[in-house]
Image (cartoon, rainbow, N blue to C red; front, top):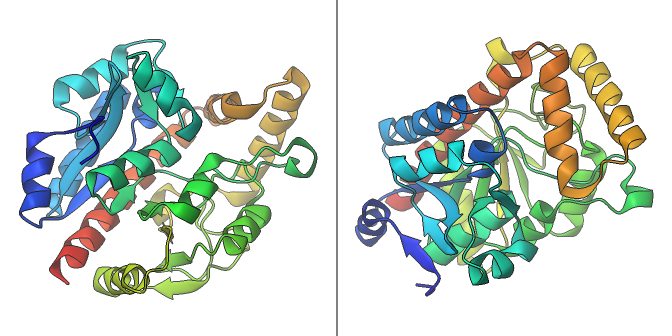
Length: 303
């Protein structure tokens, strides 16, 4: 175990007993939605994971300590405390050394999960290649992490604020398999379809677990993307959300918003324009991903 990682007693016991554990990020708590909705959502995600036979390990950084398995009080602290840093791979050494608090992104959650021995991670949507990246070089560190870190990420596809085609090209170059869970088409976060095909369709948790085990048993490094479409009843109209996103991207460009500030700005703007419907969709897709991740994790540990 890495000396900088503190694993909760529940998670430690589950891993020692060979039980299924599912990692969860904390950016969605500190930067994803307002308090107390963020904390309520985080605790409900943990409940869903337990209901499906696995142990949740919400990951974050508190006082410079990498935490694999936050307590309810720690989740509440992450949700109501302002100024908590958004932490990706490059930020971890500084945040730990300076003993600061940090909310983990997909990339940093994967890093800490791997350090703790957790293989399955549920999130909302991954970062990727941003629109206009051919001139800005704005590419999420999530993609590099998927290439090198042995954690499978269950998500609702790539956030539709991204260039999904280029994101898939990047993942292909890095050898990251993209599996569609019950779908042959990559979902686009708020919508079930994107117009882009996944590498393979998989319909059952056991089949997904077997593919992951085979990948890692073969010594093939890196993670995998498990794309689980948003539930039908919460899917948004594709033409409408595309227009909303394009307007939000234009405004971000006009205001010179770049880098790690881009996604929070765009998601807030989309929520504002959709009257909160996008927030509810976001919450429901995370619940759905948590359920799938728990089921896959249980089957993986049974192999």
